[in-house]
Image (cartoon, rainbow, N blue to C red; front, side):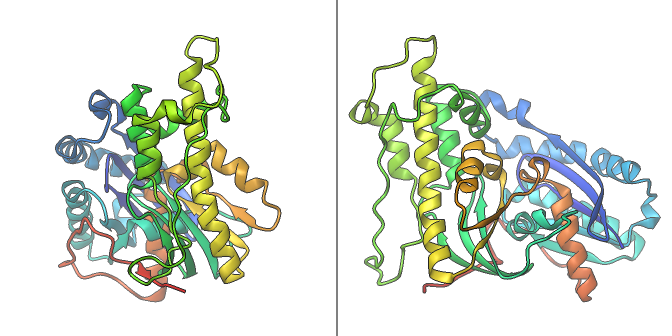
Length: 347
């Protein structure tokens, strides 16, 4: 089954073709140069660029797959969550493409697609259930995944997403954009012990009476790095040019990753599930990958780097699963900026 996948939830205009779980093409047009001046995504610019690029990106995805439009058997598109204006561009293009050819249309949840990405082209895909570590600029969560569309949140951030914290620290210090990739690169030359940044203290039972032991928080870490740096200095700045900046990056990254892992290891202990699948842009982070690789009790599965960020292949892949099940979405489906597919469970 040839499925076209379209992804326009934020600042990546992407399209891909997947057939039988194999990626036939995967085209991503990045808008990073257009947003770098503001050190963050400008929604109005993002939606306008999607409008200009969507036709050409889809055309190239079909060409790379060696297909004519008439050979596409289904269209999947991200419908939520994301920037509303950006989502609407991809959603309406996908609806028109499907309606004109009389083929099924599938509205996909962006976060479910990220958790599905590691199954694409995998020789030994993870069996359900597994723990999903979803880490991106807009969302951070630890989930129990029982099927491609059956996900239960065990822990999530109570304030900032981990990727958002990376971007804000990088913006404050002028490290560059996008913040996650820049900090990861700088940290390779830094001393992660130069600053001892605080870990959030989340109690098992909060004031709301619910279990928060697998949750995490980044607002305190962000405040410490930006506003209280000198309080956490453990070593003198490096004598090399730019050395202190790299030390800040390395120390911040180490703490940010440890916050994630503390919640993940608690979830693994609580559930007894030993397979962890990562997804989202931060899944490409080298520190996160190396720290998880050190944990011998868990089987860790990462998507290839090109499937960690936003892409059309993950949308096409999970769309194919809905079609194989016999499901499709009505053309009346609309976009939503909010998360819709997940439910929260308190053990």
